[in-house]
Length: 357
Image (cartoon, rainbow, N blue to C red; front, top):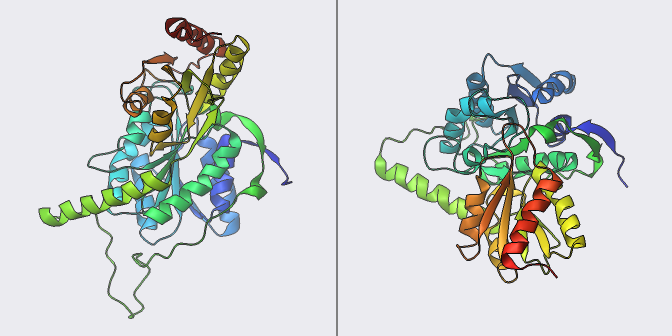
């Protein structure tokens, strides 16, 4: 059994990034993710890496672009308003097909909002994150162990598909302390990067990294090719967890801290004879559409539990094709739904569909 160490979620992300081979971090402090930058500032110089606190989030994401162009593993992190500032750079990374890891430890919004946890950046993360047609791989951890595991996996996926992976956590996951088995982390095989700008050594033609394409026919082909790659990701990289779904008539959809709260509510409802289960998306993009569609075999209703005004609920509705009602159970502004609130929502739904024994 691997040894475990007690770490904050933010610290686990930083150490996992180092284990994954990241030696370059560029960022700017913002609550509730500042511990990532602080950890990197302490660790990277000791192992020959580079930590740089940029003058702004805009500067940081463009530094990520520069390092990514060399094929070197690189990351940045921020929280909601900081990610908005990085959004132009996220689009440029997508347009240049560059791999990187970006961490968003979400806080309440919109605007400056507050410093308490939120999940209200779901749309921003899963529907693009900047201008133009593009996706990021979006990974949603629900434990400190997963903060570490998905960081490593995010780097591997970014290299494999030449795109940005985003860890979409919330403030609770970033600040929570739990035991982490760092020795258990598995780094994928190294991916060759013949496109990287590493110097020609007079042995090849120049590699050019660029997101500008002024010939519309060529730009169209680039977009089509990128979306062909996205289809491969949707077919092969979907991740999710199901809980007590075998005979469920009511399905909870939740990710991150909301899924931990919901698991307790599912157990309490089961003790009352209500057939309820949970699907926890781990990849928010690509979204696990098939498991939701398949769940229609037994499920008569769905509840999306979120720390937002209702964003993932739209993907649940699309995945279930309007064949069952989908309702929202939520808190916002930095508040977290309680197990009791989720249980009440389950009971109300069960009463509507007659889902009690």
